Amino acid sequence: MKSWTHRIAALAGVLLVGGLLATGNAKPAKGQLPPDFTGTALDGRKIVLSEFRGKNPVLLNFYADFCAPCRKEFPHLKGVDARYGPKGLKVISVSLDEERERAAALPKEHGVKFPVIFDPKGEIAEKYEVQAIPHTLVLDRSGKVQTEIIGLDLELLDRAVEQVMK
Image (cartoon, rainbow, N blue to C red; front, top):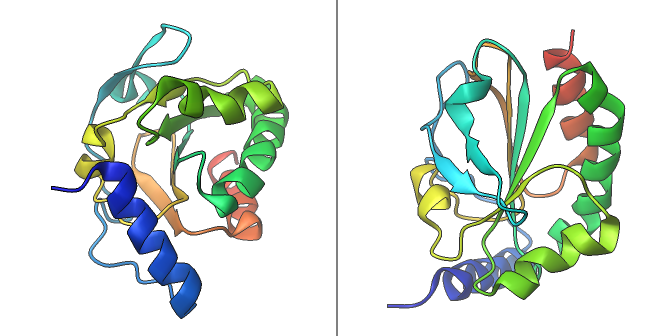
């Protein structure tokens, strides 16, 4: 069986070459609670998604260092965190890289403060049926999915965050 990174890389190649973006049957759907998870961030923090329900909107982002659109999106995530973090938004990234050093490369390069969970086996990504990256979910304060973004769309990301911050 191919590793998680190889599966995503193969799919990313199809997306880049074919110029298409298929959303598949990605779950959870808008208005639903996403699957809960507990992950360990690169800095050792334990992150439990359900702990934010009823308290904070969340931007949950899946990425990998080899993904060119992810590399373009990462500094934007830092800006979103800087702008909305003080107002309560929690930005959480999940790295699908197989090596910790690769997972830490983008966060280190951009000096991000938000937690980055190392998920080399893709266990969290599987719960979310992530089939292409970047893959981002914007959750409202109640923890329900308001927007799902598959691929790079910074304008949609900004609009989605503004909506949940109202």
